[in-house]
Length: 132
Image (cartoon, rainbow, N blue to C red; front, side):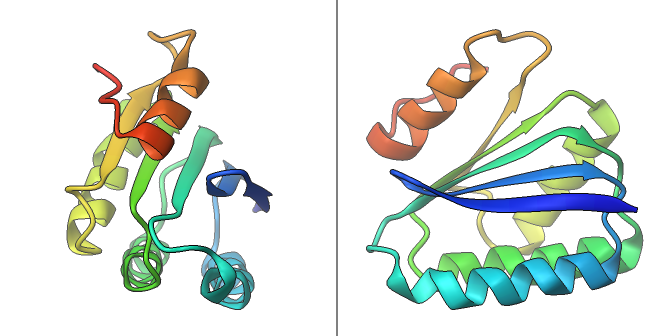
């Protein structure tokens, strides 16, 4: 099981995953986001905190791909995924590619960058490449 949290941020949304998200949880998160996305200004951004996340099942990964596509259709300008696991990083890149948003998503390794949050927000709000 897992837990997720979707919170508003000055740049758009911040999502945090913990553990191993199952399809039911991803469906709940998608429904929650679909209620919020129409109210966000064009070019909004998202920070996805996957620091305590485990790899997704194939079913969950497919749902996440659809979720990324929904975010892009609703005007997402830039996003950052923060990770610590090489396996989760590979899966997150596949999801971003399949969701059609690989060009606007950056991936940060929090284990090698203590300034990850500052760099993430700079990418989302100003388009400053994080550099790793």
